[in-house]
Image (cartoon, rainbow, N blue to C red; front, side, top):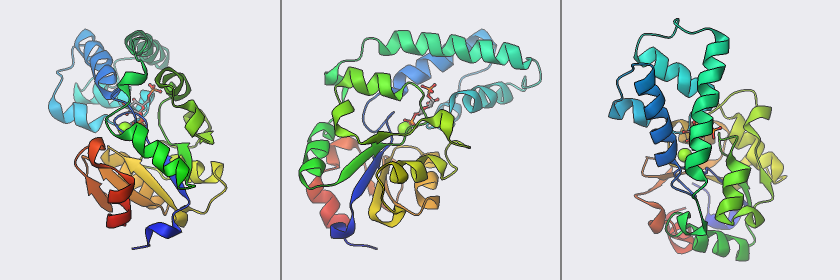
Amino acid sequence: MQKFEKIRGAAFDLDGVLADTAKFHTQAWRELAEKVGVKWTDQLQEALKGVGRMDSLEMILAAGNIENTYSDEQKRALEEAKNQRYQNLVNQLTPDDVLPGMHQLLDDLRVAGIKMSVASASKNAPMILERLGLLGYFEGIVDPAEVQAGKPDPAIFSKAAELLHLPPEVVIGFEDAQAGIQSIRSAGELAVGIGVPGDITFENTHDVTLAALKEKI
Ligand code: B16
Ligand code: MG
């Protein structure tokens, strides 16, 4: 494994890493699942983490064996309804909703000269980062609408390194979802798993400190 001194960039997932917005995605999807008559399970909830909006809808419909019940237009209306609900829920976010330890980590990485970008599947990422007061830390935010495929495909994390003008081998990626860890690894970056196994792993965001990264990498 490479030494921390070689690291020059960091790419952050948003939901579940910088902010606890996953609970709002879950609530909005759960309400939609109930509306279309699909049973909500813990497995489904976990599988949706880090997965883009339309892919998430397809997974929910498939879980209820009703993937062929809706036309493309109806599916677009469903994802739009979910997003409206999600946006209403995240309206209440404030800088206090940054996950424990992450503000400090961003400060410390900035002082250490590490360039940072956001590698989220969420089209709402810029709005959420602004609400959290975090926009100023990042040199780039990947626009998921511009990449060919969502996580676990490498595209989002590859783009996150590109935005920093860095080769992937000097970039570390932070993720809380299995699909995201796969995306980081296939992009050729070092995967930091938070609550999910990575190249190095932490139980929660609170434990992810600059000192711990230096020790583990
Ligand atoms: P939106 P991440 C992902 O964000 C979420 O984990 C996932 O639940 C959501 O469906 C996806 O973003 C798309 O979000 O509907 O806001 O475009 O974990 O990659 O930061
Ligand atoms: Mg996430």
